[in-house]
Image (cartoon, rainbow, N blue to C red):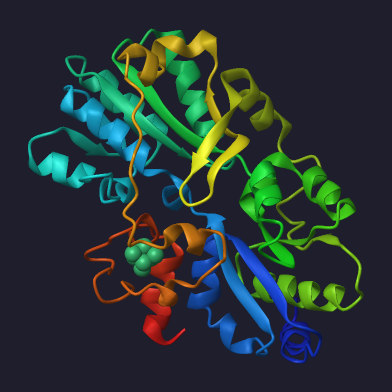
Length: 350
Ligand code: SF4
């Protein structure tokens, strides 16, 4: 897009004079990029950008952290992305457990976790598998590889989520979804088309300034037409059919299950668990884990933030008791969390 065209997209957003419009950035990366690029300053007052549940760490329930702590207390090495280490469980975090001597290994990919397990045959290693359709295929690939190679000291603790039923659960929270481009690069656009037929509007957005402003321009302009719509404003990456090989791999290794989302409760068939054939590397089965129910901190409003019911700055703890250095809730820990974005870019002024 030329500079002129970019200015036109920005002007379209700025000149919106329709009724109040709530646009939900489903994806945490969108939230951060919109802040970082200063795109909020383009918005007229009647356009409200609200943050949604698309941060994998943020929607991971307290009980999952407690499960990981249970494993760590039973001598298992926890291999995890760094963000999860500081997320509070019911009473403590994995960082606290590590300080008390538990083995918590930060990894950058599921493959790193498998490599660590191979290099440490004397340890039982469990990878904390969180994330949406974007990251699930990598976990599935590693699950397949571990089983094929007979890596007997490796397992997965899953809390993976899928977006379709989450959109349905959130449909009252927003007028337009800004769909996460990387999720739909895997799953394709059929779901977005179906949602539009059911009255749910959305625009698929990329992550550059040009792509985000264009997606917002499409959202405000199409909203004024008064009919539900779907537009793929990220066609350079998202094809209608998605990535069938990745979807087939997910389907081979994992199956849908009812899943708890932090703040949203249980959403039917919105999670993934390892299929029976992969029981040997399913940490819950392998270590005969009891049912563990987490208790969220009642003072934290992450749940309302994730549903778009309040802004991070509405939380009384925001920026005072709860900061990125001393997070009370997951939304302040994660690099994709809404509270962290508001703190980093807006302080308490937004
Ligand atoms: S500011 Fe902290 S305590 Fe408040 S909702 Fe966000 S993460 Fe929870």
